Image 1 (tube, rainbow, N blue to C red):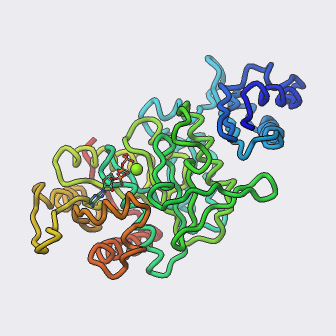
Image 2: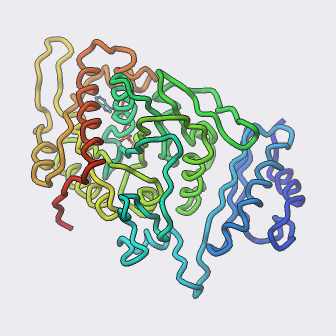
Length: 389
Ligand SMILES: Nc1ncnc2c1ncn2[C@@H]1O[C@H](COP(=O)(O)OP(=O)(O)OP(=O)(O)O)[C@@H](O)[C@H]1O
Ligand SMILES: [Mg+2]
């Protein structure tokens, strides 16, 4: 029996705000999304009160999870700055200004190379996770998710312990690309156990929310969900966590880049000029938040004829390599446009795992090896990036 929105709200009457008011009467709740055993809503409070509300968020999640018919509940706590209030900047407000915060609260490497968040707070890493890297692009559909999955598998083939996080909350891809249908189990009712596939530790918002569920995510909610996926998931010990980012360089992406303690970013681009302009924007975005760009991957770079093996450069290939040189960013490699990559990807059978001896797996493993080398380099000194604003 599916749980209804009304049942969720009734149960929340038993959860009190820090001021003792029943939660549904506080005016802090978003719309409650309840369907197919999954419940999602957010609590939006003043940025200064976030700490006091964390317990309320947890309680709300527990109460909703205990309802009959509920399989999973995700309650996001988001901070909002009151108009005219003290200068506690919400992540969204920083992002909307389109500039990196300046001065003492700057979001950049601290004395020990640690990054700080948009509010100047030390940006905590994820316990046990050595390096988090983002796979991003300026525009959609260039093959980020395909690259992220095969790169993660390539790093794993090199002997690293690898996790992959689907941060594309608008269009999660990992359930499909890794053919994952099961839901993550909870541990002790509060933490989520990630799914393991092909040796990768996997988490996606898509595991919790169905494709048909209306996407009511807004900027601040996105951040909270992302933070929960980083901190309330038992990632275990990982050498690398690959984050598949949503497309674009808007506020949501910038805020995400600011919120995740990234060691570096990889930009995926197709060879066409237009995509390269977008790639440049992607690079500029990471530069703004002081995340080193580990390199560019040119995807759908050339066409390899499946019959005769002849290579044709259908989109004036090589643009990304040239662009990388111009920007002083490492070039990580080129992935051909090939039906096998597409079919395998879309069937949840990524080539690096299912055709490890094939030519495509070699390409991705080579890229993975360069990424591993760049990660080592990023640990010593961030590569210099020349960029035109
Ligand atoms: N090298 C390739 N050869 C053939 N097809 C590819 C290749 N790379 C990606 N594709 C296909 O292109 C489509 C888009 O790829 P993918 O979903 O990885 O892109 P994306 O950048 O993550 O998209 P979005 O912006 O929607 O998240 C998919 O159908 C995928 O299988
Ligand atoms: Mg994608």
